Length: 438
Ligand code: LLP
Image (cartoon, rainbow, N blue to C red; front, side, top):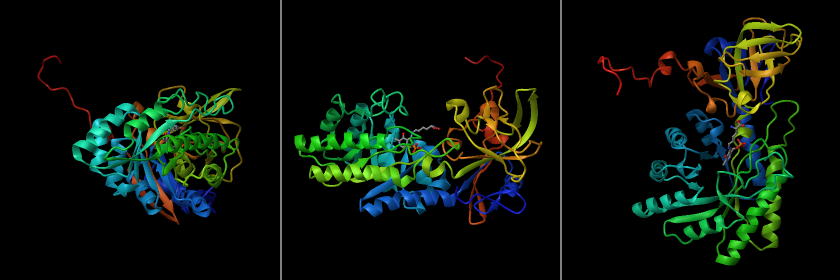
């Protein structure tokens, strides 16, 4: 994918930069982003809408990876931004991301977070629940300040036919139920409010989805509700936000579609239903996270100790683990790896790449096909750009890795490696009074 290649030294290169050099300069574990690939993905989503002549916003779902530098790239690419907390909003504001293109998500936004969104005059709050409606009303009335909103609904995509959403959307902590009248109640509470502008509806049906059916069903469900609201209340939605969830290829078993395929399915539903019901074509907004940054990211680790369990397997341990990538331990997520310093070496038998955390479950890849491992090898684990650093922890007090962006033969440090000083930054030693803590 992207600009990954192998140079004459047999080293993996990313964005035209030798990964062995990167490891020497910045140390490992190191998360390396191929920025050209991010740009390529962003363009692919945007171009598909442009071709169909549909007004759209492609919002980067930054829970996948949030940092000042990635927000700067998203800004350059003229993307919108999905943030889910005061912390992500603060990071975006620090990156001077255009506020009018920021959409604020979350199922339990605090009063303070909502006030912050008003302070920053962001583009849109995606309203999730009745408490939030009351808080937004109160804040907007007290400040006499306008705010645009979308209503997040759960369309109830049939879990039996779509087993990638196994819990079924109705049983979800997010949003207003579309079928039992909750969404209508929410609409009526907001409709015609002097400061709140209801733009339309939002749904997000799941993540790492490979088929277009679920998007079609969700889009149809929301369109039907929009048509109903027009008939009942003479209200026209101008925005239909269908969330993110577009799958990527972690291993050869994954068969994702091109970004354009998902978008085309949405366009087809919206265009045919608006035509049939003589409804003005709404803007379509989407929120890709994983599909923008997932395969743009590669983690570099250095190998250390090894252990053979005779006749069973060989463990090779790396200098990171579940602290920088919890997805294998949490979801049983699968990854692909190579030996970045010896790309031409023949594969070994299966080895298990283990992390260095004190847990047996801390394995990055159960059955990896890498070169016969030697101490000091550089292991590159692909597709680690989404939900890795953003979900990282200091478990075992391991410092979080550094992050580098590579493009056109240049590399740039965008998140520095944590130090031991960073690790204890927030600790407060006991006061030395000789008294017990009361
Ligand atoms: N929009 C909303 C409202 C979402 O909740 C999410 C993801 C997205 C967009 C972006 O979805 P994406 O395009 O990245 O699939 N930690 C899990 C994934 C959690 C997804 C949460 N919501 C993982 O590592 O697989």
